[in-house]
Image (tube, rainbow, N blue to C red; front, side, top):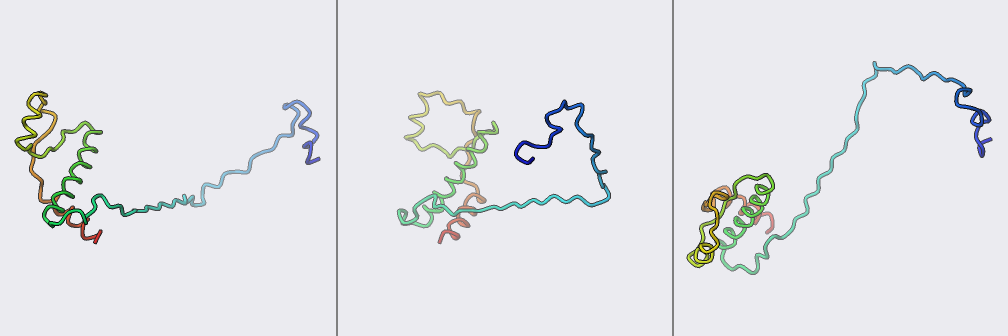
Length: 124
């Protein structure tokens, strides 16, 4: 029987036995089991051994975090924060007619330095 199924399966579906479903018990509390697991894998954004001065290392990390934030802002269509261009960079940008409305020029903010220092301490 288990190989071919019960005999009523060979009849029309109208002839199949009718079975009532058990009543739904809504008085019982329904719980959803949900497990969230977050793994943070430390990755070295910058090889700190290649930079000999602490201030340069912190400034470099702050620039990396600004780049990451700018990538997030770009996907949302928000204006980007740029560092001030050096004289050489300005000479390169002027012929390109860069539209200045698409970004805001800001020096690195204190919170960016603090975040860079926190990450560097964790990496140490």
